[in-house]
Length: 300
Image: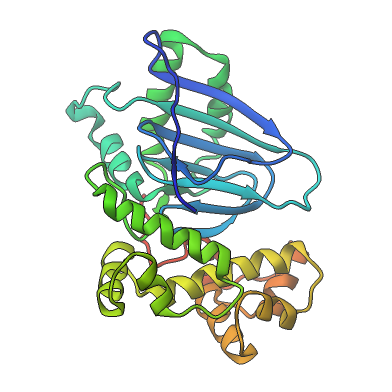
């Protein structure tokens, strides 16, 4: 997926935009914009793509994105109801860099990788986030600043292995975008390193070094992570057999599929499906944090 630059028209009279989104689907493509963004998923479930991260999302998630971080949410097309969210976007520089706000700016720096807040730690703030679209002018400004400072004391963890700060060379971003696009289109089949190397005009060795440097892990680790997250959605959203799902996600060996699923989710595919079917099922610690998709730290 090639990230598309989204032009957010705040006009001269505004530096903050807060709105409700409600539609059948989250139809925005993989995109980025120069504004920071706070998104609360009010309804729907599916897969979120944030930087180099791919993983499931559920209703109740609150995510903070720094400017220029590519992202999108793709909801489960079989879901009932609508895809609903609260979205707040604001220009960089609207809040003064004073010592009292240092924790907030440190949080925004980490948000260059995208950060997901612990639902428990932000439960008291969610009603305030939901009210933001009803405000305007100085009230919206003060309320957003208050929420951000309070969020900086909450528990959260980064999503993307790589950060997408403003100084990321556009050439590198374009290459990563083409790789994302290729993986999305072809993850169901065997992918060869030479295909990716040829795609961005590199040798296989140079491609391997480039990808590991940009993404924080080897390409095939990322590919297996991508496939496992696609498989996890299929386990929840379809009644396909585990073997059919494994083969549909590009695995030629079911043994290897089970091994990779356990590696990234900390649970077998069958137990994962049963766990979602039973709200009282036991989730091992590695499964509870499996939406991280990495070894990212928990931050309080």
